[in-house]
Length: 411
Image (cartoon, rainbow, N blue to C red):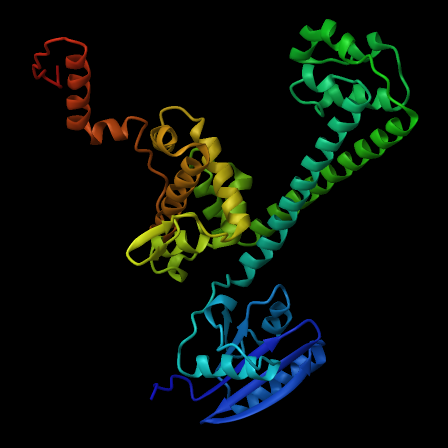
């Protein structure tokens, strides 16, 4: 017989409109159904409090669990459970059976709680995820602008490195307004683009139709609206960080890493928080973020090492940081990328660097330490003997006789 961990607990099967609750008290079960309106959720809280309920388990279903969590948080221990970790025996599936199964698993301590950051981190997360959606929308609009002008024989994107920079955008606005004087448009070029005026004159000769001009006007207007929205959310994030100095300090610590900027640091902190005690080790956080190799083994054979989906927001921020770090000079992360890319390819090498970055972040936050650069020659220093044998063997394979003499490093 399994040991009972929680004598009074509850399992909640949450949907968009209803919550089915199974309260287990000293072996007795009581099932009730509530709506997800706030007044009904408060009734649910009163019922659980009156019964002396100490722990509640909720299945992580989209965003439907959040209203329930908002009401119950602080009054009892709320455990958010991954749906994959609580599959019941198939057959006769109903909402009542789901909440009963959840309550039974919770009662016997068989559920693993998902990570839920504290309120200040959740507030920051709302803002950073909104900013990421705006950034993605900005990229989609830019791609759409490029398609429209290409359809109208305008080759601005082949001349200007940034087809929506200050100079290029001024030219696009004139094109959308019906301007045909290529000399006037080319004169809007600034800085390095001035050297390309002859090419610009050729690139700006096209056949934009009335419909294409109208669409281009709308896209440019929308692009500026999204840019303004990003500026506003950045201001709001700065205010949010100012209210929580310890979170702001963590962002500044991450900003010191190669490849990381303030925005990347804010994105990562908003997903993992600043308290690393929620993760027993760096291996746990890497597995949670799904930036480490997967484990698919059967009959003693490893079938696949493909990574899981994990947290898409955190993964995106880490991979962006890894890509930027791979282009830095004389850094450990860059050296790691160039060491792995020949064997694994770009994508796997980036995931490996992202994994290393997350491990570094974990230790920096858990130990309250600053970033320490190991240097771009770290792997050479660590593998001096291996490198020595490698290069001697290469020289001997060319028919050369090699004599090695130790030199005085101090000299």
